[in-house]
Length: 338
Image 1 (cartoon, rainbow, N blue to C red):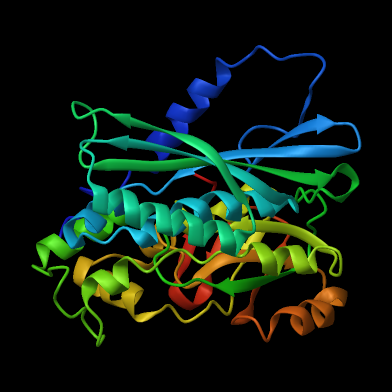
Image 2 (image 1 turned 180 degrees about the horizontal axis):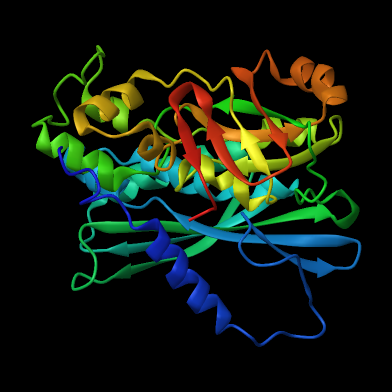
């Protein structure tokens, strides 16, 4: 893959598009006010003592590889995960979800496996899927688009916004399960250019490619909800599209990752096979860190004690006055969000 930029997303273009769209959304009700600006991981509506968190997201082009492998259960889990992992970034507890499926055709296998996956994801996140919509639109979609919307609740005085992040705070990584559900435009191009089929062994693995790339997104809901009332959390970031740049959404500071997680084999292979730079990797993938939590030094003991038996956590960096992202080990320097 000598031309990595050809099929990588134009994130600046996406940012400009969204910014222009949002500037047109000027009407607001006076009786239900929003809390905070648009552009965070989730949106909040003020209901007095509590706030309602709203967010929506989809699985993206990962569905194209699921179609190649004809494996759909993990896609249902992904749909739940992509939404609830955003909801918890403000300390909100996700409670309910609606799914939206755009279909090219009605395949019973897809319906059954997606339904099983959505149900498994709902159990993991402790939410109810209370409805949804399925639309048969063969002229628009091929083969399927899977998305959802989640609502959550949070006591207004417990909302975590990132505003309190300050110089000297530390950044912890919660390990990802793999690729999660982002960067698949790039993944698909790399697999295709290297002639790697879904039923073949993935390089450096004893697993099929389908098992590696379709590994479901890890759901962090129960873990985070168990620590928000114990640990003084300054900010949380779901590391999805845009990779490590997601943390800049919290507050304009300098985030230095001097000891990043060792990326799983899937990331190392994609980098080599795709001839990608470290900057491109960290701006596209989660690189082994699916979720980040920012705390102060005094909170380390409680944080580690609560989570260390549940998953791999690691102190990966710190916050400084300034702007941008640095990963000195790999010579990565990133400015701004897009």
